[in-house]
Length: 579
View 1 (cartoon, helix red, strand yellow):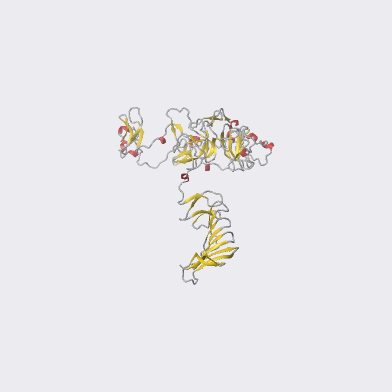
View 2 (tube, helix red, strand yellow):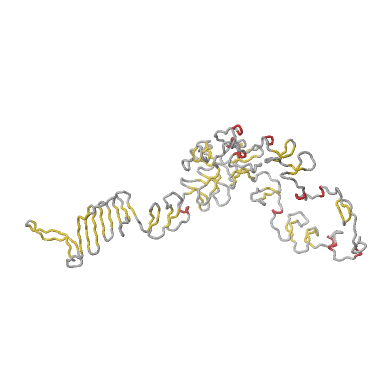
């Protein structure tokens, strides 16, 4: 499988390749389901179809890319929408390699294992890093740096390997002396006869110089010229016919030296030999071509196109075309890759790739150098190490594991808190909004705060407006702030019964919404009252201001003597008295 790991702790994103999937029909294309997100469907959608994979045989699937998935007219490997063999046609031995920048499969050189001529070495690119390494002889640019002012020679008198020979002083030349190469000063014996010019002579006797003029310096005079020149040295001219193509240097004639012509035009001859003429197009759209043995401009016709050349479908304007022009549109159908005219598949095995055979002009299945054999079940083919290496099967050992980078290697493992990386202090991972979206850190801003959902958002609160205990609508306990008093707490026992702490020291026990008992105290008076439908019906009041002989009061049961029907009895009463 060819894939890419975008970052650490992330799942494998498959771009292209082969995989094994269960429960898929053989020889069937599967498309992205437009109704069920993430699902596959064998029925091609009518709008924006996206081909995901082709189920072959035995759980083997070919992952596809692109919108339409190859088109209905694909008959060759080059017709596939993610293949480009037109920009750079493949040559012998090239393989289809994925170009990530172009998002296409394109021909690319590979280092072949053919026999190599002796003394050739494998050299990497010298200019463009994308160039293919080649076997060739060593060149100067391939040699390592030498010592300053040195040459690479075999300075000995016998055969041997070359070495650097440095010039250790100025004014030295490399010469042979005593059957070895040395850096030496020039001696008289090293100077050939008649090799010293006057610029090298410091002084010489006039009598030693031959061929001198009659006077020195000589008087001004002229000489008659001959050969390719006529006239004298003071008035020279080129003889007629003396200059031909041999006297004109290559590239010496520039455009300003040519006679101007009216454009658009090119220089040439329509037929025969002789001087060149201007060839001009008569109308827009004409091209320069040879037709009937005559070179000239003209429109492209059927006779100008080689029947075997073919025209790319993308070059045709089918806006107003009819079936009579381009043929009836083919019915919707599928193709096997082995049915393509330039693909030759013989007994394919798992893991093989298509390699271009320039001799036969076809793509053939073959084992790549680094992928052999079957893949393990529930595995991907990858290099899990931190260095370049051959691929191996990386197996998912259990369900709910993902492929991630852990401790510098790729492995299937369950997600752990460490997979999330460092988080904010005193925070939880979640989403505070009511709408779906990415998770984020929700940080507690201070101590003594709790995480609650309030007005459809998760918030950390130090003042809790409502808190509910229990899971029954009629039996739960709920702390709320009803907002009707200066300060209070509220506990809901069920939908009608409640306990409320009001301001001014009042506490109510509700039986329903309008019937309740109330206990109140203000420092002077303690009162117990009963209310029915909002009206007080019972009251027990202890008033510290009553004139009972003291500032402190207590309410207690006391026995008193009473007479009932002439019979003495004792009765327990609730009374207040100082203590």
